[in-house]
Image 1 (cartoon, rainbow, N blue to C red):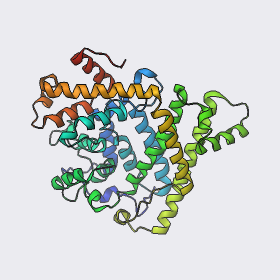
Image 2: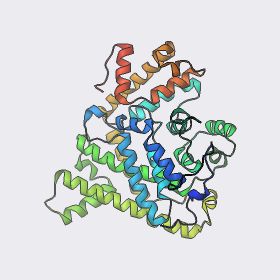
Image 3: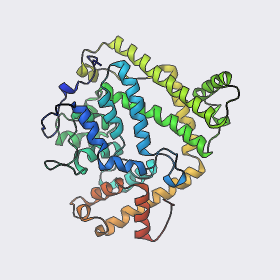
Length: 377
């Protein structure tokens, strides 16, 4: 399929940090995707929390299944818009590589620990993984991904960290946070596909866990409207099949809304190429109506699932584990592998080590160092 003129063209990529000869049968973005899939950090995602820990159930989402769902949604939207599907998939599969164990609880705790040492941002850590921490190739650290994939991975970045990135790589992936310009359409698309995916699967996982109910969700317009539609079409449908069908319709409606709304925005703006996209306002978007309904669903999930007492209890214990791991390694670096313990910037090395842990490895390490078993990881 031919790319639209405003898409990211792999033949016109801004290249890699270390020059490599192109491959004969794969584009630059296909090559990025393949490197991500074969990375150690990607394999770890299967044992990293999305909302529920692994031991709480085999069918709850993990960071890996979430990333795969983002990639699927992203490709479904990219194709009718004429965008590069391989770049979308590469960004989607890599966007959470820097996430800590125990989901946002682990991230918040590690940021707190790193407060005196520059803080911790999981998007920046994902970039750090692909630029430095992966060890696979003889000539360079990291995966040496293309600029466009790295740009998409860095979804958010503080001004201070953007300045540090700009000092190391002038005109690189940190520049847009200083110029207040936009990333590629493929990167913008991944941001929205991420939101669509986690809203839908957190409804599914929340219902499966019993922490939220169908009756509660009937107060949420995005869910309630499609529930009525499903009940009209299938009056006897119940249980998991009913929930799946409502969530399926929610997903389809959001995907079609993004395609239609973004398509109109592109026709109105008429960017001549990918560089013109960067100078425009964000072009990948929901309609105003769908944005409102999506926001209502996010608000519901925050109040009723993410702040549910059972989730909050687990969250508190997870934060305690991360804080105590950090303190233990800071007091005795030799408890870490030598490659981390010997680094000049010890706090950052500790953050790298903890962020790379799976839930269950973090639990075992915490028990080994403290003698306490806080979670059945």
